[in-house]
Amino acid sequence: MDIIRFIQYIASGTAYTLGVTFVALPSGLILGLILAIIYVYGGKIAARTLSVYSTIMRGIPPIVLLFILYFIMSGTINLSPFWAGSISLGVISSAYQMEIIRGAILSVSGGQMIAALAIGMSRLQAIRYIVLPQTLRLAIPPWSNEAAIVIKDSSLVYALGVPEILRRAQLISASTQQPFLAYTTAALIYFGLVLFTNTLLRRLENRLRIPANP
Amino acid sequence: MTNKILTIKNLTKIYGDNIVFQNIDLSINEGDTVVIIGPSGTGKSTLLRCINLLTKPNGGQIWLDDEEITSKEVNEDNVRQHIGMVFQNFLLFNHLTALENVKLGLIKVKKLDKTAAEAKAFQELERVGLVDRAHHFPGQLSGGQQQRVAIARALAMDPRIMLFDEPTSALDPELIGEVLEVMRKLSLAGMTMLVVTHEMGFAREVADRIVFMEKGSIVEEGSPEDLFNRPKFQRTREFLWKITELYGKKEQEE
Image (cartoon, rainbow over all chains, first blue to last red; front, top):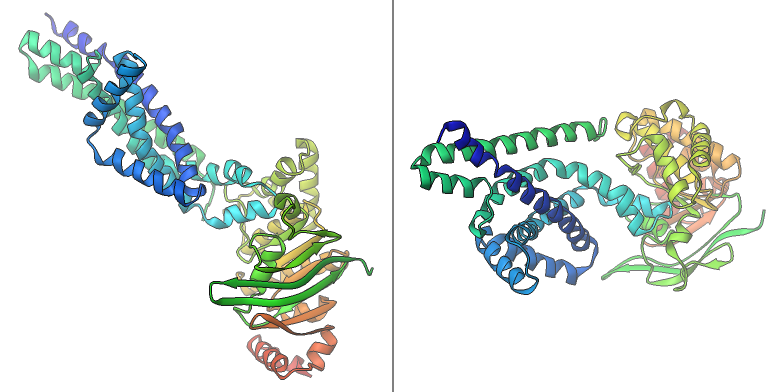
């Protein structure tokens, strides 16, 4: 087997890696955003419940959670490994993203909310038009860290048999007895993806920066 | 001009064991400027926050025109758009330009269309002399300019009354004048205003009535003339003496 076909075989798993990431990261963001808003503005009981949720999700290795969530999902709604794995990673990520966004909400001063209420806005309007636009800007740097983690953790779905980069590297390494080349290729692809994403997010951060914000 | 805009009866606010103020009675006529003075920590700011329902009082009632706004059936968001509030630390929306700060409430609360909102916002910025700063962000404006934008933002909602919570206390001395000037013009134009401030010069010149608050109650109220020249209570006299001393205007005592 020549080297080009060797690399191509592994690289063709990138589609799955990207697929998993593009499901897991946005679903984690939407869920994390909603949970963060409920955490901060939803009263004591909601905050306590979500704090437990966050502690559990962040206190168990993602691969273990992945298996648990996968077996729950595949047992009940019969999802394919790809979808079950992606959604599970999204749920795991939602706990981290909730904490990122919650932190950012808390660092937008409470005065902003008061000023919005004072001109007659409802709390929901104040969150939507005043708090979140500032929060999401602040959240970009820590969020790009989480994006890198999700890209890398997408490799965990190899354990469910999804033919993504790591899974393919493992297969070809076994059949060709070239583990170093196989895993180095996989490493470089992951690294490239993370680097590209972080560069993109840094551009976004600079573009959205508020001029001379105190 | 005897139409009462704001009436407060028996208002009380308690935090835990701490009585912030107790049994406050106050009423403000249309077009009047009432200035509240008094030492720090006497509940002046909390009183303003109770009036626009940002803080719930423990007892008493407040009427805006003929509507009791402390009643349970009242829609708080609706009440707040009729009461303008200006804060000590400006509290402009940091991610919006001056124009957008003024415009947002017109679009989202008053439901004006974009063109009408923009025209009205420019008109309000004109009133505070900041049309040329319309597209600047808060971080690009001086404190005095930020506070003037904050005033324009409140005015844009066409409030029945404007509340000012120590509007110049966070400003460098050289920037205080421009904000007071805007407020003075506003008062002359007939806006009903309730102002908490330590600016005695402003109080003396602009106020129709001055209220002296101490330790959670109103000690004395009257015209600037009466309060500055013939205070009835020793406590009022001491406070006024201290504050004029502090602001280096001792010669105005006489």
